Length: 451
Image (cartoon, rainbow, N blue to C red; front, side, top):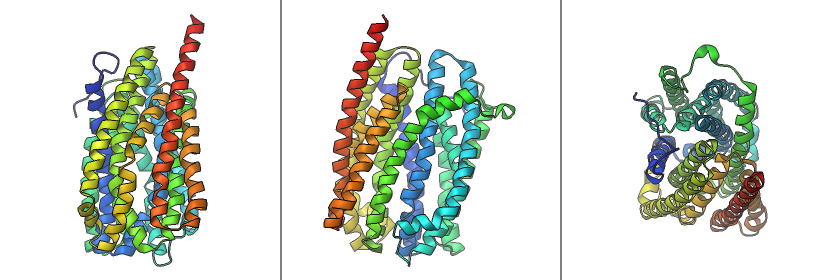
């Protein structure tokens, strides 16, 4: 595969942001489409209870994966900064640390998750008729955590150099395999939710292996050499200092979604199935807007490493404008085709009617999420991950938990529950914009005092 890099330190900005963000967005969207195939296959061939079992695990899996994806973003920032400074030794050590850390972290999550899987699903009020399939799905999925984490860290290494195409190509291969295996296990072997979980584990193993081989074949600074795979303390510390707050920020969304999913579960299997179908549509726009947040992180990270703060500010401004515009257009398109898209997952008209309510609440407010991602991504690029993590924790998680246990409890309807999304985004987006402006002001004052 031809090596691909984007020069983030010189020349134009807007076109390079698109070259970086669009393949990354497509990667996320394809990944979710292949995950949506799990829901669609069980919905069409195994019934709505199996569909609900898969959907009830989305928030838990998101919580586990997003935490380590955030730390993977820390690896991206550290390698990007080393690239901007021309620190080849730092790049080498961070790459090899990231690989081993991802595998060890995945193994730990698998062991812990297997112990507590039934208890967690019980806390989430998964109905009795869905519970056995939900547990089977989660336990099989957990076995794949080491390779899922490995893929995300490998992808972060490629993206730190501006290469978003290589992870995309590997994902396409494994994603097609995932769909084929879904149909094989469910339609031929007659498995249910456990079949699509097994298909996911196998396909993730393939994508992680492909990226590992390609890293070994690289001829530049991120080339992977097996004999150097170890934990380098300084690099791990830097990765965790930046990545852990980013991971916690991502986990906040998942924690709040677990809270919301528990409320959804209390409304019955039809609402669970409708919510699962709608989630697999709305999440597509999240990957699009999130890709610009990751672009802001990587571009700002390299330019901040090169001490070009003025270019960092231009990158943030352009990224914000592009993200808001593209997010608004695509959100409206998804909403316009909402009903036929929901029908792909389940032909039941009652489920589609519930699903369209969720889509309207979320898609019409996604531009607020776009603002949140760019503001958070830019601050992470500067090496400041804690502030956006704390703001997001208070604004998203705090608001949603309060809403579920106070507002929803007084009016336990799906309409009331869905209102929490735009409300929490308005609060958090406003706070993040203020935090970013204050951060820049503080940085300029500190730089002026040095001179």
